[in-house]
Length: 264
Image 1: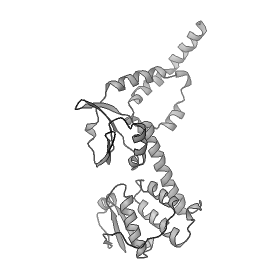
Image 2: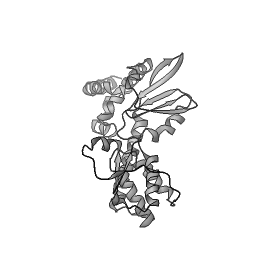
Image 3: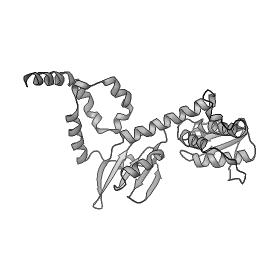
Image 4: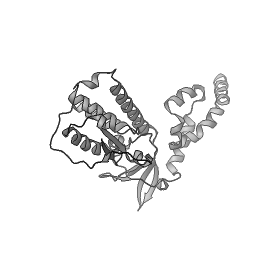
């Protein structure tokens, strides 16, 4: 039994190198124990396997790009079993069925697609719910955001933020990694300090005023709002501090709108 430890996050590059080495040695999935940094920390009793340092092998296998694309998303999931699942699918694609991912009823493929879907959804939420606050550093504007994704989805959205805010200096801080953009270069750093995120800024005050004024009490649908914007994301969004009060006052405001309309 071989134990392979993936210490980086999300761990795709380490997993790819380790998987190629295992394939070159024809090691089947059931003979490998995959460990993430978290599972190593949680394993108080250890196991009888031998932790192995792997090196890039010369032997290669042709893997469909569509399969590799799924792995990149799935390995951004926080599920500790993601490394074992992806290697098992990889093994089966090579030695069992090259078109395996097209079998939508296969248990491994169902699980893989579920991980991919969750990560893509999480990445979309980041682009929708992340909020920047302005700092002035050495007389230059710098925008900082603190966001807590459900999975390791920061890297997936970096191209989006680079394109959308390419002329703006910004930093996105998450619990596991930070990304810094200076309008030309992107740098990453691990375990950022959340205290670098300012408490508020002047632009945010304007945004809150605007948000409060466009709120339409006659069209409020709380269940629909919570479906698209679950409360677990509210702590990342300053405008959500206004929502409860606006909802509580919505009936009175709606009645006033109706009365004002009749008068006119």
